[in-house]
Image (cartoon, rainbow, N blue to C red; front, side, top):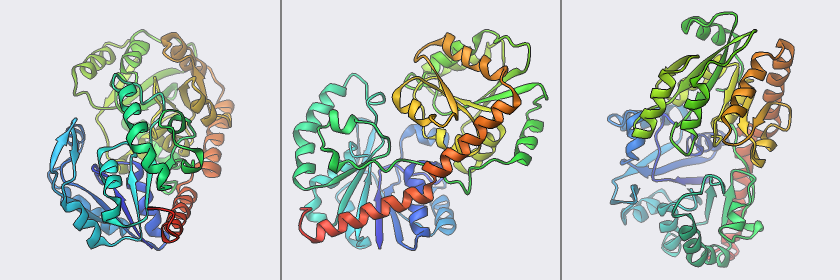
Length: 398
């Protein structure tokens, strides 16, 4: 099967779904291509080297077998790069059996949807959006427009929008029926992310972590949506413990004024804080293998799965999706938005017995292997693609 993944943003150093799923589908024996743009988001360019993107693409192809086709950006709309009309010739040249557009609400996905008859290929979309993450000042207008103009097209043409999280956002906000929004989940590449005692020892030596110190890790953005201010304020004052002492390793960048303010708080912390710049995806496993506990001050990112695969218990805000993710006794939750609640959970882990911590660590790995291994998830995506092809050939997709 010839599979085409489309997203306006792709960098080989990242660890998003478009980086991982194509690789596993290529391993399944399929011919997989990624169609994207040269012009990535400015923020991504600030974290990763874009000056040698063709070289990085070639390396990615050599390592995975997945081909990458890049086009030049036509223009930007609301900060996002847009494909030009040459995208249709590019799709025709690739001649895929099926197309997966990443991010059902992106301008790219809407563009492909509107020109589906010209493309004349089976289409699917995926969604990484939750109700919590969707909240912004344009949310109501966006959902109103989506329901009015996009949802009817998806419903009439029986086009699937795959959910990566078991959340009702697509159904309640966008008005999509459940039969068109299968939940296939998200996972991690356990060939990369797994416990490694030797790496843990080497990293503790590198960062001079004492035997009586416990490493708490955060990786990701420190903007307002991710609770950067809460993070800085929670760590500002000393977290007392008569047993182990905390060391906070924060892997992030600080570009905006808000993020710079968060960095200033972290630098003033009475606790030991180690600031590490954003890492390539291939270098992240060592940090998860290094950590004793992972924590998210606000929105939990997909790095949750990578940390859990490395046997790292995780502290999350108390919302339903997070409670479901730690239902195997593989972490804990604190009251959303509560500085005191986050600090209290950190203290709980500082006083936790080695046996109890090891139990949560084992549960984390088991949870990933039983529910979130990408090898199994990729099979589900491929089956969904086969179904889309069957329905297209039967005339159900139009």
